[in-house]
Amino acid sequence: GQPKAAPLVTLFPPSSEELQANKATLVCLVSDFYSGAVTVAWKADGSPIKAGVETTKPSKQSNNKYAANSYLSLTPEQWKSHRSYSCQVMHEGSVEKTVAPTECS
Image 1: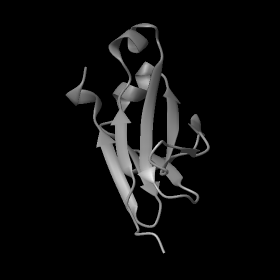
Image 2: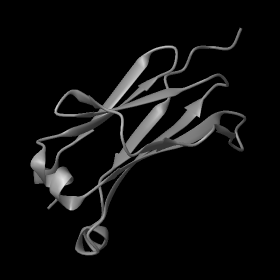
Image 3: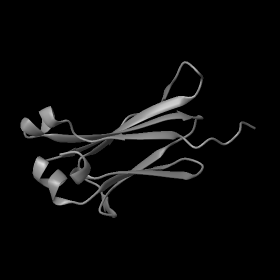
């Protein structure tokens, strides 16, 4: 079978332009994984978030691996009211990335 590869996970915080427009969207980019379902779980300070989450279907990359995006829509107040947000990706192993509002104000 194919080697098991943990996906590459990149978490982008909301941009300052977006926050000024009174929106906050976190983007979790999942790439370089082999076919199969990938599950993205969002957490605020370690607590699961269910609302405002939208995950795209995996699409094939040029290197024959797959990529998917997950979006978390928040208000700027929600974004600032937690110490950290994380996006946890489950795919033959778990990868978790965390971003903190204090790091990027």
